Length: 178
Image 1 (cartoon, rainbow, N blue to C red):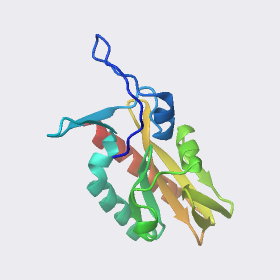
Image 2 (cartoon, rainbow, N blue to C red):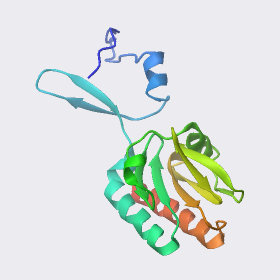
Image 3 (tube, rainbow, N blue to C red):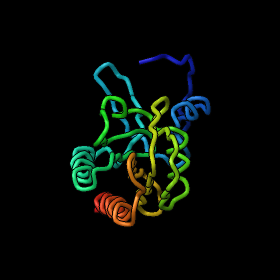
Image 4 (cartoon, one colour):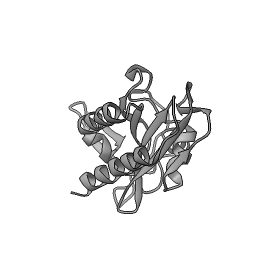
């Protein structure tokens, strides 16, 4: 654990303010859920809560199935990091923070299909040369909680691949609601 040197007092309602610099660095936005942990030494630890990471084992099986069926590298992320990867070396993506490109794609709140050969960066510093890609946000109760990504290195993403990614996003959203 890293000390910041910042000290805050708890107000009369039991609230404590997380400084703007820390919120920006940790990508904590207004309304983000935080999970609270305590330990025996009296430490209170706040951790960003990712509902989709609770399904990480399930998400991993899902992307592996999509990869086997479509032959297209497949990823699932929450709003901050990659949680499931198939079709590329996992160590290059697993549990790594998503890039600004991936974050901005999610913010569009709609399916993005690009049929133009390009280089994309889903996690900082990891570039993939692709012929086409598809990004589908996972939306639960009106909030974007993650995305499903398909990258094609040999052909353009077609309607079948796009629908498969959309079904994956909808299915994961339904799992979060139940």
